Image 1: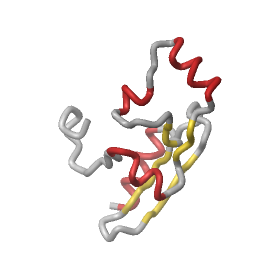
Image 2: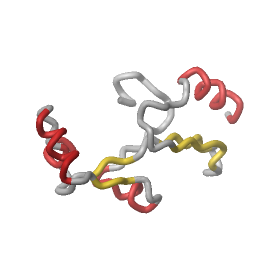
Image 3: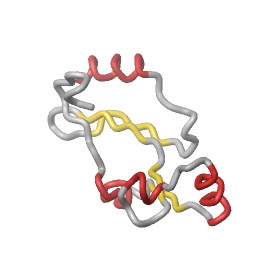
Image 4: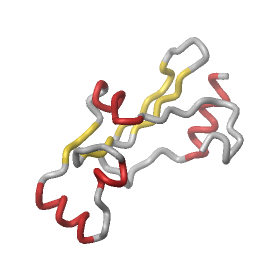
Length: 95
């Protein structure tokens, strides 16, 4: 994504959900929901390359050049996301 969009800032890729687990941002699917996803052809362990039925909660962290987290948004409802324009404006304020 970073190369495709020519971003000049790093984007975290959480392979194996390591950071998501540390931050307690993952949730495991109950059996009935697994069946629903499989019915849509979405085998999450296969898609994610991870042997468990988990997904991370949507989270956005804005971190300044010193490593200080300047803003965070975490919401278990994946339909509720920060507006991209708000994120860009916040990034402008911290750089």
